[in-house]
Length: 383
Image 1 (tube, rainbow, N blue to C red):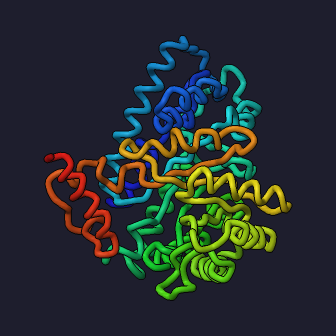
Image 2: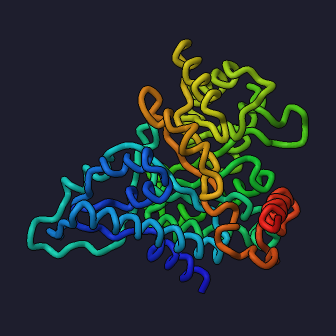
Image 3: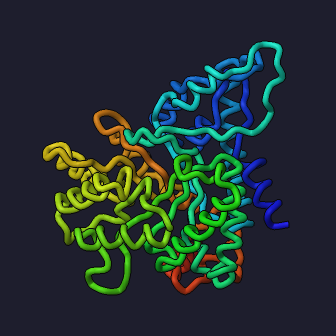
């Protein structure tokens, strides 16, 4: 029953069927995420996806349909996430077209053949990495390895069901971090994907999926956290062992480190990329100034620059993504983004309106700071 619900969640609620010469799923998500006009304008330059249908809506009608679809997507994602307790991230790109869409045009069915009505996942280029990522990703934060009922073998079993539903729906980006469940989330993901690959090698071939990790909080010791060369090197090695993979596609500096010079961080991440432990590196919750500093240090010394950011982004938390980061989405940076907490840690689902439900992430001791934030907002509302 749970597996069927998960599969319906991805197939019915998160994907937009192809429509004739109108906006793709990526445009809907981008319109949903980039709410202000100056950013939303990026979607208006997006080239339409190919389709066998010949219907061509007017520009005005198309825009209204796009906005309505975005609102429906927001509420549908909200309801499903509350039910499943899964981590969903939105991948946002300012690219005007993608290789996936170009391929779709070249493979369009000849006139007269029946249209393929199967829901399609859209993909976007992630910054300058050359990697195509699904507009929706699947993450393990605050769930696997944290909640008592999805630790160990039970966690692997549930992870397999969720990962399989996501993968069959077209998701190719799976997000994790050394801090999630103190490493248990990565261990569960690694074992679940290993078993799934044994069961279906084609669907889970390593060349077609992308795995991430994030480095900052690796343990309680003074040198087991932060972005020193020592911890970056040891943290990545430990994550690869837990994930059972020789490399990760994306590695994030989970937070900026005020105690380590930016050049030291850039050189350590360059070594990780060039020795094959990661294909590219990025940042999470860095300021625009810190990101540009790292980029120009890398360019000055011929090192690998950061290429993507993972910020918090939802309707309560918009300023950094929409204003501070806006110049980074353009040349000469062309910075890519994924986002975390699009539902404000579940607050936008409404499940915390009356009380904190048993088994929710706000009820977990490791995430008492989330409960504190909820109480603060409740106090502000009453005042």
